[in-house]
Length: 116
Image 1: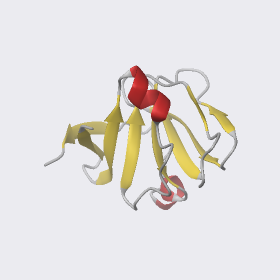
Image 2: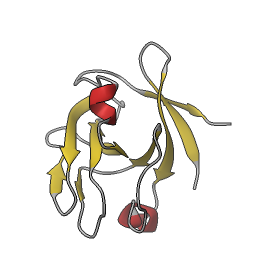
Image 3: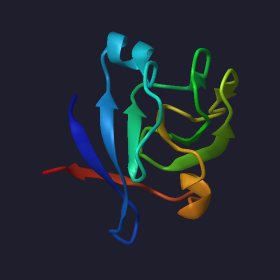
């Protein structure tokens, strides 16, 4: 799967994300994994909501609009649903606590850069 760097407005790295754009990769998501490594994530595009059915661990999810502006951030336990709400077009699934630790905020614009 393709990987990209997700950068914050100040140029610092938010995470390195695998990119799920095909129907199959979006549907599979994180199923079958036991965890997400610190500093990694899964960028799902398009995505307006997620489910955590059959998941073994909680995650944080950051919903983005089409310009990669954060519209919502949420902590999602296993076996729960989450909706991005108005304007959500993409989602980044992250290790639990990552969004709080990095102080991601609604209105912040993220950008993508190649990962080498």
